[in-house]
Amino acid sequence: MSVFRYEPWNLHRQLQNEINRVLETSLAGSSDEDSSSVVTSHWTPAVDIKEEKDRFVLYADIPGVDPAQISITMDNGVLTVQGERVAEEDQERDAFKRMERARGTFYRRFSLPDTADPERISARGSHGVLQIVIPKQEKLQPRRINVEV
Image (cartoon, rainbow, N blue to C red):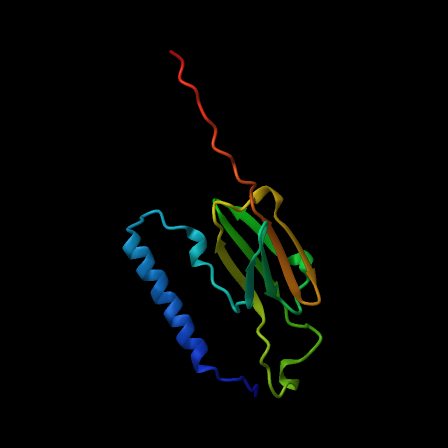
């Protein structure tokens, strides 16, 4: 018999997220719903986002996940981070008295502001923390256009 930690607020959070997703979809009245919103995750990594003068920095806690196995994509102003934490195959589940660490796929999406430069995004993983650096675009100066007479 396996012992699992009961977290009632996790179920509440999942229900609230699902309700919000349904309401956002119905209020937007969009018939061409983004199919990626139906992707399910087994767990959600904690994320910190910091804005600096010339960049945004995203830190995600992903211990036990090989950084080379993480997929990061940028499309239409949305940054997507996904991957999977796999269970060790050589360990028997019955041998555990308690299992609290989540396993399986994770999937996070972030809408980026117009100031983000998608061409220069970089990422690196170290000690279980994924760091994604999103540089800001240099401000464009208004250009004066002369009217010919």
